[in-house]
Structure formats: structure tokens, C-alpha cells
Length: 252
Image (tube, rainbow, N blue to C red; front, side, top):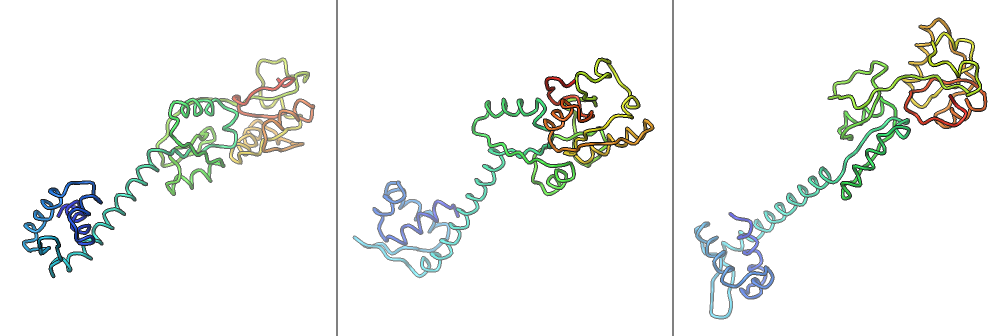
């Protein structure tokens, strides 16, 4: 049975009027009559008794009426759910990012992408790698920007979008600031200002220092890159950061 025929049947059973049914469904009376006759042939029974100026339901129609209402309701609900699902899928992207994401050009690229797709909703979830992994496993992320420099492995599909390296951040007047390159061992006597915004990155720096033969001593730790650079600028210590974060005046 076609859903449109059932809708016409339910409307006619409710109004008991071909003219009202046609008006309510925005079709002509001839179409109403054709659909009802087609449904009667399909079911092999008479649904309405037609008189000159009135019609009434047969016993078959009275049996079909509540069932047809349920079928139409289920059909409408299924279509509504499907539309909502497609809208959620097509109109929204959920992106996972690390706390340092805002210091990179990725944000500018996403902003450009949003301008090219103004109807697209972009939701950004920020957190450490374990948090983002859990969201992925729950199907709550479409993709994420993460680091793999500390040997992180996953079962997700991955591809490289950029490369970065560690760099030493020193006050511009620091004796080592004029050197083009440094070994970690050159910093063994320095006080460190550690970035604690990403736990695995924090531990990586510690491990690299130990591999270079010394235990790093830190005077400050902060979750905020700008705070770290300000501390370095004020000679409170040196820091090891990824190369991409923006530079600050008086910090080499």
C-alpha cells in the first residue's frame, strides 16, 4: 500500500467529504476518488458506501482506519528521524584539538573553511590526547589534531598535516640566545619554565633531558603558552616548547 493512498483514506474517513479531503490535501476531488478506488482494488474490499450527498465507512474501513493512522505516524516519524540524522551529519563537524591548537595556523585554515561553508556548524572539543581518544571511541569526534612526536599510537586512520620540532626559548639577553643551535646538555644548569598543558609533551621534555644526562630543575610550570613566554622574557627561566607557537618580543 502506498503511503499517499493511506493518507487520502485517513483524511476521507475523518471528513467523510470528498471536497474537504481534496482541499485539505491540496489535490482535486478526482484524485481523491481515484486513490480510494485504487486502494479498494488493492485490498479487494469496499471502504466507503457512496450516496448522493454523503458517504459512510464500511466495516472494513473501520478496521483499516486505526491501523492506517499508526502506519502514517510511523512513516512520518521515520522520515523526521532520518532528516534530523542527515542534517546532523551534513551540517556539523566536531573537531578535537590539543590545548596548544590555538598557537598554530590550523585555526586560520578552519576559519577559512568556515567562511567557504557558512551553513556548516563547527564544534571544537579541546583536551589532552587521552580525552580526545575517548571521544573518538565513543563516536563523538569527526577528526582531531594531535601530536605523534611522543610515539603515540592508535587504531584510528592518521595522516600528517605538518611537522614541528622542539626549540629552546630564552631571554634575548641570555648568553646562549645568540647561538644558532643548542644541545639539551647546554641547558643543564638552567631553571626551566615548563609547559604543563599537555601531560605527554611535558613528560617527553623530561625524558629528553634525562637522556642528555641531567634532571631538569623547574622554577615555574604553566598551562598557558603566553604566560611561559612572559616568564622567560622576565628572566624567570628558560623553556622548551614546540617551534610553532608565536614568538614574543625579547624572547629568542
